[in-house]
Length: 449
Ligand code: 2IT
Image 1 (cartoon, rainbow, N blue to C red):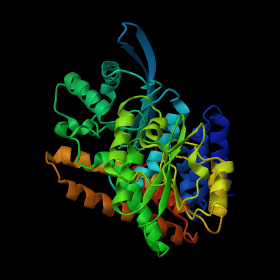
Image 2 (tube, rainbow, N blue to C red):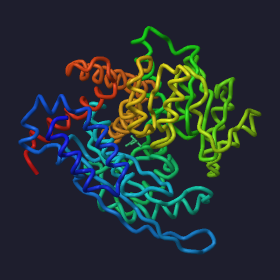
Image 3 (cartoon, protein in one colour):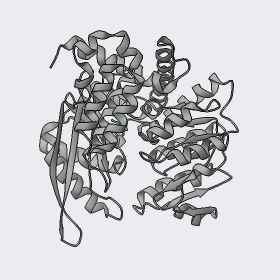
Image 4 (cartoon, rainbow, N blue to C red):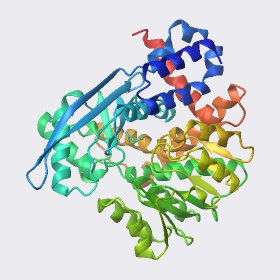
């Protein structure tokens, strides 16, 4: 490996040994950049790569809130403003019990390349809290969000940092956060958050955007292979907002999502999550706060596999859409043995690095990386920012057409970047290179700091 690249990766490993997810993502992305670093010796002179792994700013804050029974609880809030070279920091907030600095930093680092790939002017950030929303009442959620924003509001703004949702943070939470921001700021600045409810300035299609975008990207991959989505079976994980969007669009296009998963196990529905009743039930399950996928099996009479993951099921397409490191080497081998041709990552970093390398080395398997596949979510967030700053509202069709075009562009930019560096049809390296290039150009142009 290129000596400069190797030394930066080794430094990150040594310095951040206590942040395994962050180290993992730096290694994955930077390994793809070898031909780029070889071709651009000026990056080493400016020590560009060391700057790219150091967030511009990261902070934690105290979030204290009162439970319904009158007891007080304190959680840690996080925000990592990773890279602002091409736009205001932009990225989601994750509320989940195991959120920590390593997870926030890996997500913010990935967001740098993802946001760049959209072609829109958005820098990168990520945040959240180790608050566990499971089983919390609406009042508890509201008070937590108000306390969280009371601590965060001074450090964000429509031109500074624009948070959004992620796991555990949906429209309800974003709107509570926005209500508190507005009260504290004393101004109508709805461009400060994206994923708001429609009446508060949220964009149409934002709730569906990540799932729809993933399917639009998948269609590009299938077209490249001379295949069609209609008639295909898809294994998904999770049952949240992203999986819901995939089920809706896949069904519309004649494909079938046959698995869902949760922390409790997975369900296999051979008829597909393919009726309005089933698809709507995902929203209900998520809103219940129970965080159990078994409820789907109980309601629709399908089989529930407790404590297992869906990656042993024979399907045409795997779309891991739950969380990081869901697919390990063992599952990757199972996926390859099942003859799955399309491995389309959707969740952020759903595959361990060894499993990803294994799948990419299988001649019959096409791998697409999450930072490209799930970028429709943040891209539509950027479209929400445009509507907010222009004080206008686009129709569903207008937003959807833009989203579709952006996903086609992301796919093509990835294909072109890999080809330019002689890597063939490599969607993983192509996304890393294309995403890197734009941020690198801006950082080089803005001088060393
Ligand atoms: O991972 C992601 O890209 C998100 N959670 C969405 C971020 C956003 O700003 O919409």
